[in-house]
Image: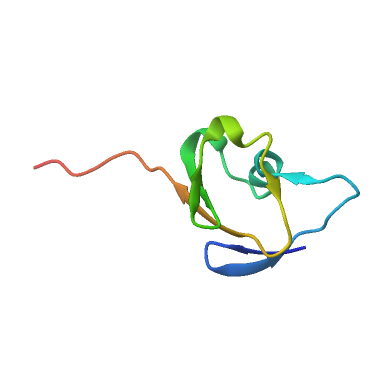
Length: 72
């Protein structure tokens, strides 16, 4: 299965089971509590990750939330 993830085409090995967004994020090494995910141009609510099916050709943008800032 080919996916576009953060602008890069990645080939994901697909088993007989469908791939769900939550499992894909874990497989890619993302920490679920620290990311925002856009799937094909739409932000996906984290509570929907367990039921969101990933299909060949999907486009994902995964943005990691980083704490910190500057002190003036």
